[in-house]
Length: 390
Image (cartoon, rainbow, N blue to C red; front, side, top):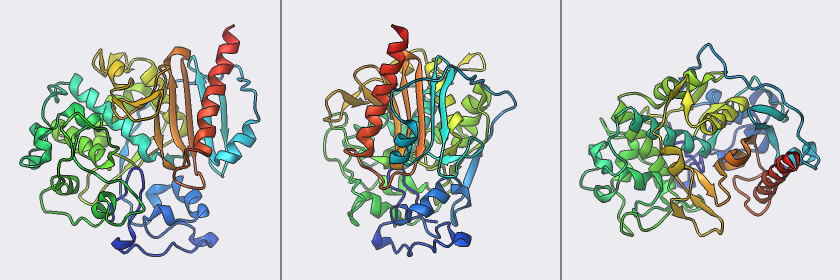
């Protein structure tokens, strides 16, 4: 099957992807994985049920019997028309949890509380959290260990000089091009990568990349490296990401529904992308983080993990913002997991606030349009919480 990428989920034109499928009601799901060329109707249908798209294979992240309660709280007046905001964002679901209570919960686009929705790069923050769990469990000895300690297949490559911490912060210094419009970019070339027997497809490609800067000196967004992080966790723990996520968080914290995680061509979860869960369970993950990484009465993460993971470890040339361990950080102490087409989990510890959104933006990214409007909405919610506290 073709590679399903975190920030793009695309096949380059050079990879020979087929034309979009028919949009007739009885044949709405796309027949290829070239998401950037799906119609809006196809995305609406597929995002809520990615596991049924042809060629997609998934592992299940099993939920347990106990469910973490999210009781209803007093409705929050954010000072704007929520329905109009959701329509402009093309939100399928929007939930605000504050002080552990649901202050707002709405659905659209034929989606509802019982359904799952794809995460795209929101999954990166789940993957990095599993690194923290593996450190706590002793599977990973130190973030300063070289990546090759856990992925021997990278020995002799530019990753010889790269630490686990530098993978987490995307500061490896290994050259990477994540331009989805360039058929010669690494994302496009990776899509054409053929599996090598006995080796994960991520390792097969990433070990060919050259170095462009000293390790730790330059931040570049690299979905391929999040996929390496997932391989590292699986290699260190001897478990699939889905099984480890279920064991450490999904069951003990009390997620309500099973999630699914898409597999790549060599049978490993695509750890930079492609987990599907319910809106409330995305919010519960945010609550797990707010609760200090405690699940089932047990601290799942090292004591200092979240303080480092959710604060700026690398600059991204945007004032007031940065990058932690696969989290986008803000200088006011809030942070977020973000995925293309409007997926997001925004967390503000100061206000005990979680905002989770699922959506289908008209385009994959639009930082000056719907993206800026979403940031403004986050600020309006923060302001509403502050007004209540006055």
